[in-house]
Amino acid sequence: MKIVSQIAPPPTKAPRAVPPSPAWRLLKTGVALAATLAIAACALGPDFKRPEVQVPQSFKEGADWNRAQANPQASLSSDWWRMYNDDKLTALIEQSQKANFSIAAAEAAYRASLAIVQANRAQLFPIVTADLSGTRSGTPAGGTSRSATGSIAPGVNNDFIASATASWELDLWGAIRRQVESARGTAEATDAQLAGQRLSIAATIAIDYLQLRQADIDIQLLTQQKDIDSRILYMTQEAYREGQASNDQVLAAQDNLEVVIADLQTTQIAREQDEHAIAVLVGVPPGDFSIAPDPNYAFVQPEIPLGVPSQLLERRYDVVAAERTAASSNALIGVAEAAFFPTVTLSATGGFQHNTFANLFSLPNRFWTLGPDIAQTIFDGGERTAAVHQARATYDQNVALYRNTVLTAFQSVEDSLSSVNHLRQQSQSFADILKRNQQLFASSNAQFDAGAASQQDVLNQQLTLLLAEQNLSDTQALLAQSSVALVRNLGGGWDYKDMQAAGNGASTKATAASTPNPASDQQQASNPPPPH
Image (cartoon, rainbow, N blue to C red; front, side):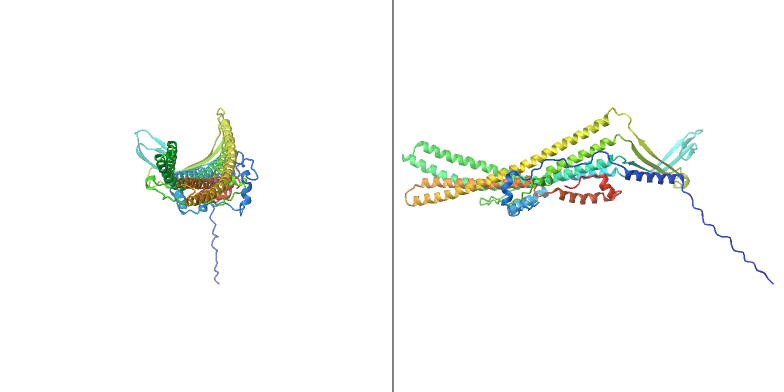
């Protein structure tokens, strides 16, 4: 009987896990601690709140305005110039928005402010640098030198180093986040100033254009007056030769003609200068620009939605810019206060060093350093305290400027409303005067045909009629210009909320790739005031 024994092979042992090195454990601990401190960090300084201002319930000079509007709840359009139903005016304003150099400069200033915001945000992240170097050195015989890998033998030696360094200043006290908040406030103020520049250029073109059209009408009327005064002077001179008029009457007729000629020259100067000003505003040399005269131009008086005074806090670019400037200076208080606390910086360096490049990247040739750096100013002679006082004083100054800007905004609207209200009444009076003079001129012609009036009487009455037409057209032109000023003082259809929506979209694209925690950074790094 044969006995066969089966011996089972010994069980296979699982490989032992290699414990992490002390350096790796220290790195993980440091990163976790840094992340915890960064998340839990506070932001020193006061959070911004819009300064309180006294806002009236309604405009005093607009008491009859809202009652006369068909839709008191209507809002002003951002392309308000289309209300004047003038294709030439629309084309000029739209061209200026693209070609005006003041707008281009303001737009560049806004882009620069956005770059400053992005540069400040970059301070929230670690800085990583890399370095690769090689040296060749000689050591005298009988001597040695030391390197990171040990002693170097006498003679000519090579040394290659490849290293990387990372450093991260923890924003424990919110200094960097307050700087971001301040820069963002400045950028928003610059954006509001850009909108104000666009509105200012558009309104200036509209007013200059209406003045030019007013000059077209006046030039035609003054030319007609000059022709009539020339005929009256000729008739007076003929009557003087026949002994039917005195020399004083001739002199008076000459003065009347010269006054009209002088007024005509003044009006032509004004038209030419308005044309030159419009050329510059649309980015064209005045010598290459001209606008054809239109002596039959009809001025349009659009219905302008007035709204309530509180809306000016969001629709006036200068008010919004002043508020954002105050918010920017408020954030700098936190930056100044954070200087009283220590700065904590984590840094790490690692790399390889060897005397031959072929063997540089091998494990035995590695080196590394890791550790925090804590710095605190002990004595500065009161410099930090003075910086806090300066920041608070600057904030108080900007708050005062903001409140004054709000009051000035209310004043400008009241002034425009007063001007429009009285010019409307004045225009109605001149229209009534024109009607009566038309009747008188018709009556004078009838009397001349019947032989009851002289030709000179008819010409004098025609002069009075032309003067009435000029007074009416000038008043209508001033009324149209005052309506443009009212649109400008109401904000020109611009709204801070629209700016925020557009700005957030642009800033999101610009900074999404560099945001470590979008939700936390949106809330903590910027700390913007709530929307109005």
